[in-house]
Length: 510
Image (tube, rainbow, N blue to C red; front, side, top):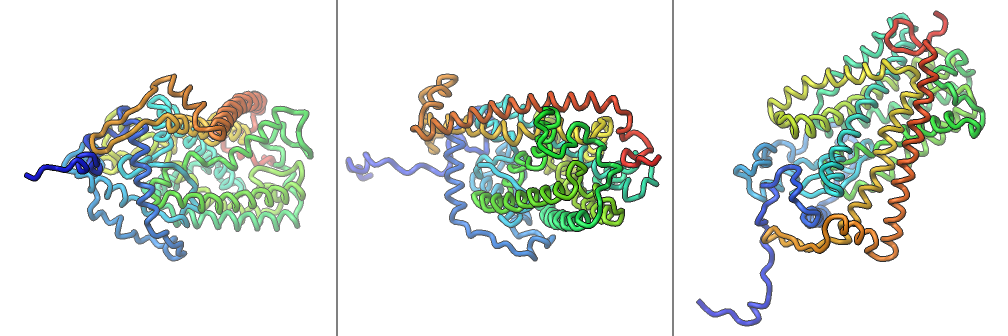
């Protein structure tokens, strides 16, 4: 064998594609995987995705129920095999992850989301980000909070559209049956397990909402407010001006806005299906522009015409029954789609992070898992209904959801995650994929202190901003809980609002 030259010996060989500790042999949530390893594979995945052709947004494709070739299952590997490293090569592992990424940015317009991940270590839910930024305990806290939020949101829309059905029936149907009708239909819609299958439904629901907005605006301009129900569920917030003299009303009004703009907790689940996750920004900007414009224009219009008699939801505040029914019908359909989505994500968060992790339930992609999922759906919906039905005053139920969960998921946790990510990135060591080891200096609490003050002036200012935003949002959450609890105390003294009755809370004539 020829002797190697000194130059050859001094030149390091390129790292092997296969790691010494391959990601395919890791557990799904392995605390031994370092931030350096997550970051290395994420950077490599982003570089690969930048070379992909941007998916074209075709209306026919949005509404088509046909699946792409990548979803046909050719070359895919079951998660059960992959998670245990049985007969799975590194290439098969990454190809299986790629195959699940089929959503384009056009679909994101209707399903909002965000996150970072890699083919080797895919981020499937919000809790995965917390796990990689702050550890196992943070993951459990975020997952529990997200599951509770989605359960309560499901209950909220169930009660909201129970009132919807009640008014459409002119109160002829016993009120307790109305939300049950919504729940039963939801049982079947939530059997759709894959988020991509919701794409055309979400598209349809979006345009239904836009149509309902235009119809209710036109009806409001030519009809007086529905005075008979204008004060129901709105104790403390019926003001013509800014309610600066009433803290409870001001905070509960603010929390209604939090409900309107919350949604960050769903970003990761949708982004996991994107071929090019960086295209998220396009979808987010378009979606936020439309949502913001719609809310500002619609809200200003309704308050201009109805003032303190504006009702939530606004289409019920129209006095003409025909226009009420039109709004009820359109929003009922879109509400079913939204509720099915809340149920889908909520059940999967609970299933994957509690039943699978703790109780060793079968994976949701397996035959047993699919049966188990189908059985959980009616239980989940029923639980959401019972919780929501037992709480009086819709406006305060919205407040408690917003203060306890949505505000934290959308405004408190993101800067906290960003802070943890930036601190670890600033103190990141080296990672060698050839041997699967990394070098790192500081660990533990000292690493967080050093990382907070590292990265230059701009990064330090950004870290301080994230810390202040985290603390301010946390304080607002506490204040919101106080306001909603005070509102509940007042609402419980009023026996009119309860779903466990035949009399509709909207029907004051009986």
